[in-house]
Length: 130
Length: 130
DNA sequence: ATAGATGCAAAGGTTTTGCATAACT
DNA sequence: AGTTATGCAAAACCTTTGCATCTAT
Image (cartoon, rainbow over all chains, first blue to last red; front, side, top):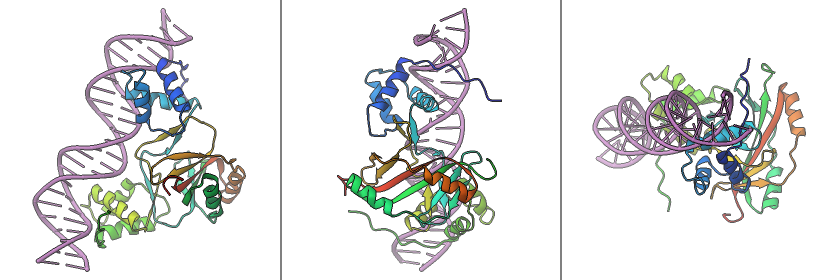
């Protein structure tokens, strides 16, 4: 059984954190958000930032990038390839599919940048866990 | 100026770490590798594991997944979209391109799994840094 | 009134680092 | 011989958590 989930309140702090996040395109870190929010709520604590980021994520109002980041994983195959991660058992599987290098060029044109490579990762439940 | 890079030696420890990584498909964490290598080199230290993982990465012999993992970044836009990360200035840009949901189905068939979503990230140098 | 949120400080877990010693080449 | 790597332990770093207090509903 999963626990009953609490009724979320929209506190001053939570509202401001969401506002900061919605009003920037810079994909900030928790610490950057902390610095911004502190300008209006000087005594806010980092713990509150982290707690709220997790709550907002759970509410579906924001996204976390670089997640699964508690510890790095390594791959003995240094050639670019794609991965599937099972969100149930945490296993990472290699995908036998050729890399779409053509996508890199499309992005180069779209953003006027130089693309070296890309990473593509799928998430879901593996054969055993589904 | 960048510093002269050291001539790498292939020590017992380094060799074994690479061997462990090459002989598994489980995309292990540093700690898991540590446990494996310890079976043959009982007094190896975790520091050596981490140092060698970084060296092997730099030598292009292995890959790190979940990198850029020192701190998470957050995105005020919870709708799935793609990103470009500049490896020079660390900026993350949104990509205005529709999400290829058809890829999910292809992977489901290939791996006999259930795919919820995928992440696609491009790396290179942005307009300003290139 | 009361469950939920905050601030503070301490604890947790992963990764890095300084230093003396050991080992490749 | 000279430089690179190791082991150990301490430090650094980001993130989470316990607890007493406060606050939104």
